[in-house]
Image (cartoon, rainbow, N blue to C red):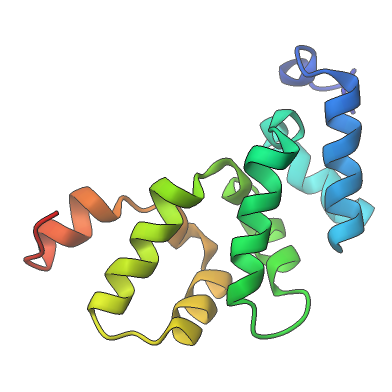
Length: 132
């Protein structure tokens, strides 16, 4: 895979293998993992302890059924590239301010993972009359 994707040439092999194994052990099948990496190769270069594990752990706290996080990452491979502090916490706070229960936020986020990429600060707070 690294040889076929030029964007992965700069990624350290050890880091790429650790990330690959992490996703595989987390429940993403190898066939699906090939798809995920082809859509978002930079996930193999992310720092495991600083980026991947916190993101997956945070998403797992929202999980209502086993395998939902793996399914969400398969649907939207960019999820692990987002920051928990910059994207997920504001999304959760915004949703709670609207009165959405945390379980529903989890369901909404894992069924439509693209919502994580939305800019809560600039769009939602302004559109809904919230000030940041």
